Length: 178
Image (cartoon, rainbow, N blue to C red; front, side):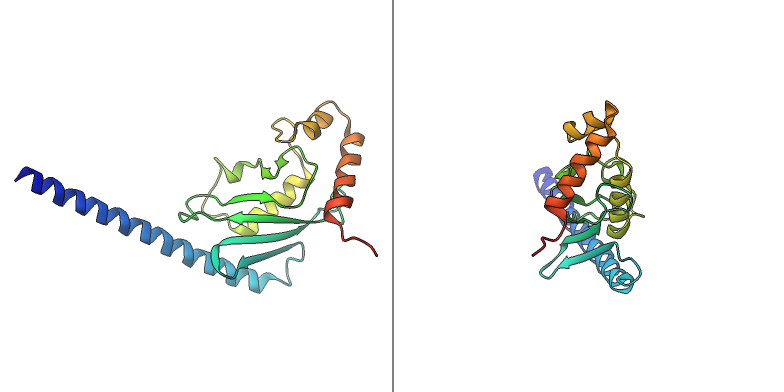
């Protein structure tokens, strides 16, 4: 008799777990569809960010962001890939640069607190893009993913850092001429 009760409890627990996962996925989809509609409305308002949802998977997005002015990234267009978890917005998206960039906090992956321990469901994919643009303008060399660029800034060689960052931007993030 005890075995029967234990099996019944296990089936109930498994059923509840599946229900919670289904609720997470439904909530995530609803949130992402809301963000998609918002992005469509803001296309003209925010010319520095172009967010695009994958046609076949609402959990996959790409973004094109313009390099911030008065930085070595100015004039460049950088492509990002977003992988959104099923528990979004309770968990942050995974974001990586597809465009090569010389930056202390980027080595394909991005070292940004809001994508880790400082995440809040109030953040959107659009606001994450804005935070990445802000990080591009204000690198944090004390926690580098790219040690070469971090070492240049930490040693005070701002000119060397900017020269390398401009070269990477020219080669990887600017349209080819002719």
